[in-house]
Image 1 (tube, rainbow, N blue to C red):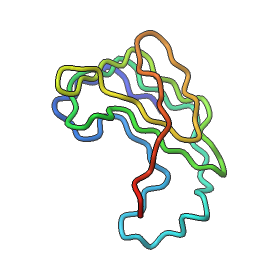
Image 2: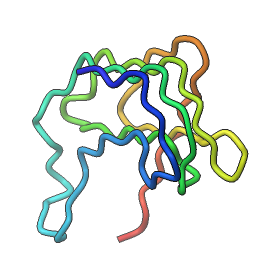
Image 3: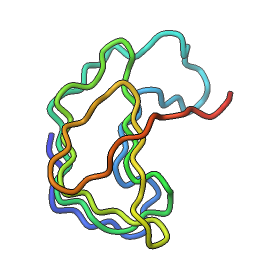
Image 4: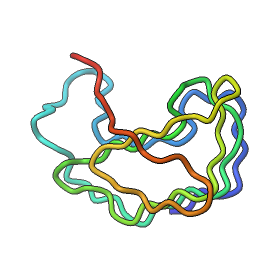
Length: 108
């Protein structure tokens, strides 16, 4: 799956894949997702975000992402480069793109 040449304007979650998403707290967080995500690219994505984290990649500990590429990502939060946070993935970085910081989940 490829996302390419996209302009974001004050978007809350410009780039997000979250395998721990659980909208009604009915999930067992001790059991990781068994869905394998691979070969996803985000190229030439630019614009502004409402959140400090413009890139959020939270992957399953059971089947981590494979072949995720970030290339030429230029997202701004309050005029500064937006951050990228990641868990269980090491994206391939090409060109200008933020380096992933460790994802820190909110306390339950």
